[in-house]
Amino acid sequence: MTLTVLFAAGDAAFAEYREPLSDAFLHHNLEITLVTEAAPAEVDYIIYSPSSTLRDFTPYTRCKAVLNLWAGVEKIVGNPTLTQPLARMVDPALTRGMVEYVCGHVLRYHLGMDAHISAPAGQWVAQEPPLAPERVVGILGLGELGRACAKALVGLGFAVEGWSSRPKTMPDVTCHHGAEGFNTLLQHSDILVTLLPLTSQTENILDARAFSQMRDGSWIINPGRGALIDDDALLEAIGNGKIAGATLDVFRIEPLPADHPFWAIPKVTITPHIAATTRAESASHVIASNIARAEAGKTLLHKVDPQRGY
Image 1 (cartoon, one colour):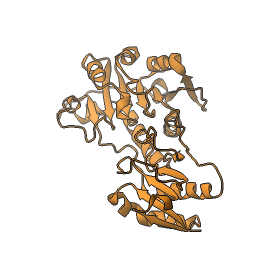
Image 2 (cartoon, helix red, strand yellow):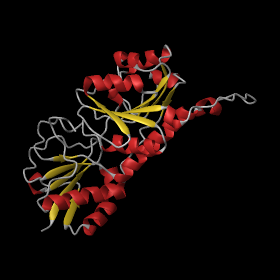
Image 3 (cartoon, one colour):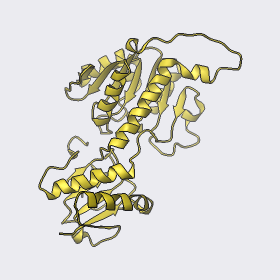
Image 4 (spheres, one colour):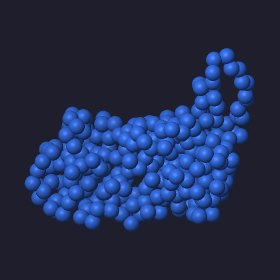
C-alpha cells in the first residue's frame, strides 16, 4: 500500500530533504508519495518543523503520527488540535554535534583558552589549569543529549554530575533529582551545561536565586533552550562576578537582536544556534524507521508525552 506523507516544514527544507527521504523510504521498503500539499483526509503521516504554516491538525483524520524534524517540541506539543501521536527527533548526527559543541566549550573554559586567545602580543602569563578530575561539570537534563554529553565528558576525565526531574542513574555520573538535587548540582558545578527541554516547569529555571547558589567564578554553557535562563539575572550575575562567563547558543528571539545587551558583554560568547542541527541524511532514516515501526504496529520511537511536554 502506498502511503501519503505530507512534508510540512517549508520549501527550503523540502529541497534539502526530498532526496534523502526518498532514499530512506526505499531502504526501509516503504512505498510513499512525499508531497508538500495534499487533501488532509488523504495524509497518513506528517513531517513537521516549527517553521511550518500548518497549525490546525483537526482535518488530518487519517494521519497516524506527526514526526518532528527538531529535537525540541515546545512549539507544537501544546497545540490543542494535535490529537495525533507526536515523535520528537533523536538524530545520531544531531547528538554527535551537541557532544562536540559541549565538550569543546567545556574544554575551552577548563583550560582558560580565552585569556590566551585575547592576550595582547608579548604578554606571557603562565597559569596552570587544574586537571579534569578536579573540575566538576554539571549537566542539567539527562535525556538523550544530556546523557551523551555526560558520557563524553566522563571519558575526558571530568567529574560529572547530572540533574533530572525524576531519578536516573548513569555509570560514573553522580545523578541528582528533584528540588533538593537541583540545588546540590548548582552548588557543586564549576561549569554548568543546560540541556533541558523547555516546559512551564523549566522556563527561567536559571534565575537570580539559582545563580546565587552557584560557585563564585563558575561558567554557563546553554545549547538547550534560550528561555531556560532569565537573561537579566544572568547579566547581573556576570556583572557582579558570580558567573565568570557564559556561552549561549539559543535565545528567546532568534536571530538575537542587534541591540540585545548580550552582544556588548565580552564575557558572553554568542553562537548562532549551531550546537546541534538536524542533518537531512541521518534524520531521514530516523523518520523512515519510525514510519516503518508504525506500519508494523510497533510503538513510535521518541514518542512525546503531552503531559510532560517532551
